[in-house]
Image (cartoon, rainbow, N blue to C red):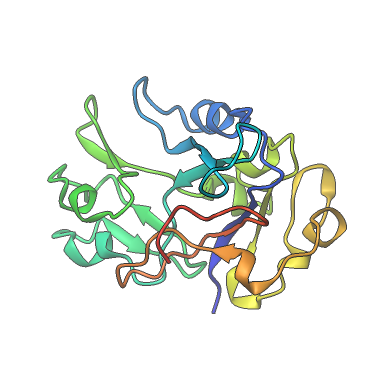
Length: 205
């Protein structure tokens, strides 16, 4: 079984927003909507009484997590929201009636109603590109070499692909299992992973 996803090394992310811009361009995302958001986390003191230069600060990219057990698929009354064999969650616009049940059920607030078309849209993991063996745009445009694309089921992050033909194992510094995090899991089992070393993760496990 395949479960495509993205691993992001938050220690490498510089918050340049290239992933956000690239996503909007290649997917023609309407003004005011974002399929991929970059949030600044911090600065937060590393410990009580820490000095002004002793802070945690990192950038967190949030988009559809292409969950293994997505709530959005469960609540869709028409089957418009569905999972493909590659593990990604997609929206069939021909079936979508714009009820927004999926948007309300998403724990991450990453689905939007296209006001003009009256259908729900979200990150597709650039299915139009990955089907051709290419990288999702947010990975391909990552100037910090922080984002990596691959099959989560393989468990071999070192072989995940990134910009410039690089493999994750060639670029990313060593990390432990304790350094690997997910966005809050409410039973939906998000597929994306975030690496954060020597700083406090601000999301629930």
